[in-house]
Amino acid sequence: MRGAAFILLGLTAPAVAPLAAQDATAKAVVATANVSFVDAAGNTDVTTLSGDQRLEYTPPESGWKLAEFASMVYGRTEGETSANALKLGARADRAITGRLSAFGGASYERNRFAGIARRFEEITGLAYRILDLPKDQLGAELGASFTQQRNLDGVDDGFVAARAATSYRHLFTEHAWFQQLLEFLPSLEDGADRRINSETSLVAPLSTRFAVKVGYTIRYDNLPVPGFEQTDRVLSTGLQATF
Image (tube, rainbow, N blue to C red; front, side, top):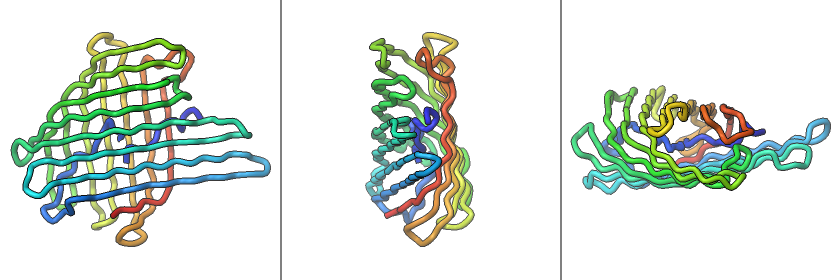
């Protein structure tokens, strides 16, 4: 279950945030929540609970977009805790032109099964909408990431990294869509220290407010906490609610 220590940001996490353009008729406040639960007993004793939520506020004609997010994963296998991760944060975007915007954000993460007692991360940079069509949106971000991390062994690690991210979304219908997020974080202090985050999502509607969401997340750290793996993978299926 170590690979289940990360959850879809829905980015996440992102530290990765969706870069798709807001429709002119979009609501000022949009809330999204996802939940997934598995409880197996008998020959296999596994319990897994994961969930995330995101709240976006776009004041009309202000040029601002504000967002907060939170996600968690908890799992038990054969009576022992095998996953326990939490991530939360916030981000603000300010339009400069029709396609270009500046952003800043901060997040907190705890993931004991990846060796992380706590991690604070701040990001800043510029975002640009490369493609903005009715059914296809493509965006890119370029900036910096500042990380302060304490490992389970008590070692503190602070570093600065460059940050490049991209987001692509395709709408099949108004409520059915595919999204791919990709984030690259190379340290500016150690060439071998680099992280890559990938999040793939597919949403199929059940109604105007509820949908089934399938996600696949990959987290790669070329220099993980000693004693832990480089790559974490999560495949999740759950119910999504949008208000």
